[in-house]
Amino acid sequence: MSPRFISNLLLLLAGGAVVVCSRWFSAGTTGWIAFGVALGILGLTGVAQRDRGRGIVQSALDAVILPLAAWSAIASVVFHGSTLTWLSFADALGFVGLGVVGLIAHELSTERVVHSLAPARSSESAMKTAA
Image (cartoon, rainbow, N blue to C red; front, side, top):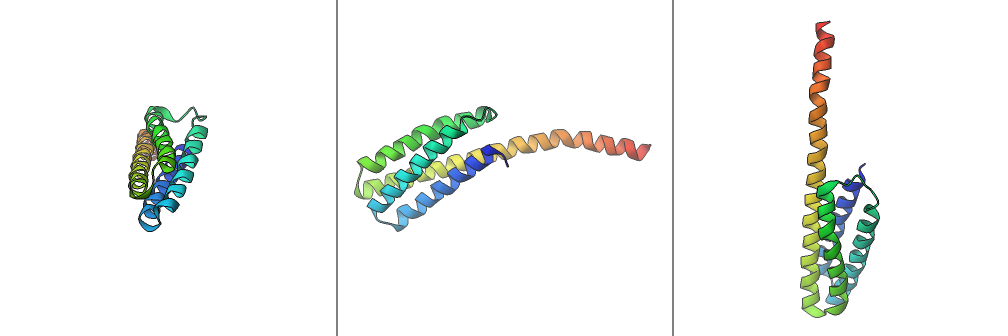
């Protein structure tokens, strides 16, 4: 599996977990969960930058993910009550959206590679059939 796929899937799942937690738990619990998830996303994205094959699209997504995760960590500590709940909810929806965009971009790049290989394979099988 591609590291890009794994990092985007984890981002999507973590964001989804915070969305559910923000609607289910109290503001204090949601804040600590959002804080932990934001730190995890910061760490994951930082480690993922070591992979030089991430591409321009994924690097652009990472450039949006990092400040959003930093903001989410800061907001989780600074704000309280319903403000914290709604900010955590909104940040988590942002993570979910960025995760989906990253997964779609990964799938499109993989699909492009498969389609570029497909004509070569069909021409090889046509040559074998003709011979």
